[in-house]
Length: 236
Image (cartoon, rainbow, N blue to C red; front, side, top):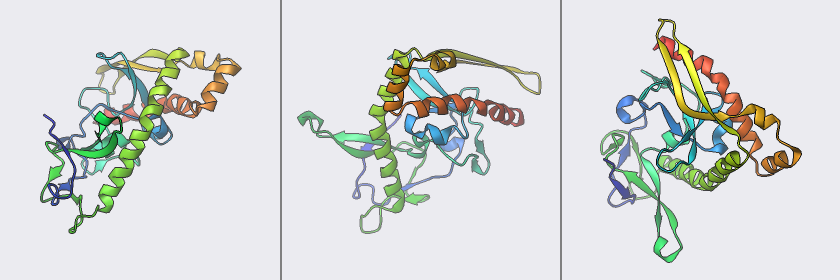
């Protein structure tokens, strides 16, 4: 169970974070949430899909790592086998918190999940300097969290715009592996290319003006990564 605390250089002065990648440290996941502003980097490695939350019915963009629950085919004995790790994975065990919301002036702060297996007092990257300043590692994490916070509103409007133009469609993929076993990927949506290419000039102008055309085309292009992902599955 998560135990979130407001990060500070007094209570957490000796805190260290294990930054290597492994199932034991929480990287054994089939997919993670992602953000439209990082699609360009993601599409070089991962298929990008859209997943509907069963509780809220809202759609979220995700980067796919495997075909089964808890399967991450990018994990190897040497770590994460890709040049780019999605921000949602890179930022762990930190998350964005808020202070002063009661007054309507919520300010972002850094929280940490103290129950994360990445948290240590002996091994890993130090979070604070001996005199209390931020280490380069924490500065990097703060930059990621700022980007994620800034991109959250963009992400929501991006998804709302895709839905308004009816650009999402359910996706099912049947896979037969080299050993004869069969897998089916279900529960995700992708861009409906027929409807995308049929959009009129006004709709395309809106998408372009909002900066959404690039991530849309990046999501479409990312599906070419299926061949490589299936190859990883055959080797697993």
